[in-house]
Image 1 (cartoon, rainbow, N blue to C red):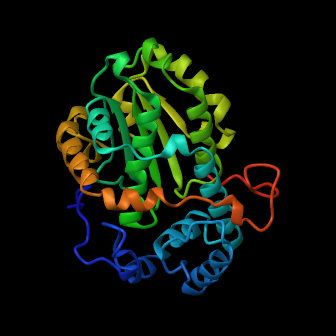
Image 2 (spheres, helix red, strand yellow):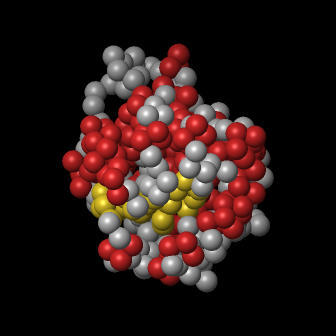
Length: 310
């Protein structure tokens, strides 16, 4: 049986003992993927120590970037630089919610990584409305909640083989779409396009019906062709099951997992107990005053290749 979202190791590595409830044994990560070389991680550590403007990352975080960049040291450097610089520049999109905000928004939407991966080993990030009242829909805060879920999950689990994103649009109306902050969408998708440390394998939109054209119209300007090509729109769950089998889904979708209500309760409790982690993670910002080479755009000289999406 797969571990639940809130299952975490009881023994923490020394590197994070003072930071809160983060991750598993580093040796286990190296043992799982032989393509992650300790020497490559050492090179990135030494490079990072010379970048005084960048936050000093844990070994696990360095491994995550190296893995996502298909073990390329130079691409990992570029993505580390881009990721933290853009998170700092667009801080208002990613600042963690306080506990009360987290409770409130957890009653509006379910956002969580499901406890059972796909047969290919891909983790499933599911988002759906719980309260469909448009006036309660705060796109910026829900975006921040997605980031909180993803950051905690990555730091606990280490590099992921792949991520499947599922958005259930049931209950979504034109009133919800009018409340989407386009700047937040632009900036959050910019990080997804260019530097997010996960391998996105599939994106699924279910129960969209009459809003499909409007939703796709909103998304398309902000996505690369590669990302846009990963989107699958389903008119029925039968086609969705071809990608994500029922055994991997909550009971609302005819699946074998507990209901979203039960999963949400577990997720919320775990996140509320993990605020030492969020306080530490929130401190990982770029200090432009310490950057040795000033740039003309986003604190980064030159351009970066878009992260490969496969």
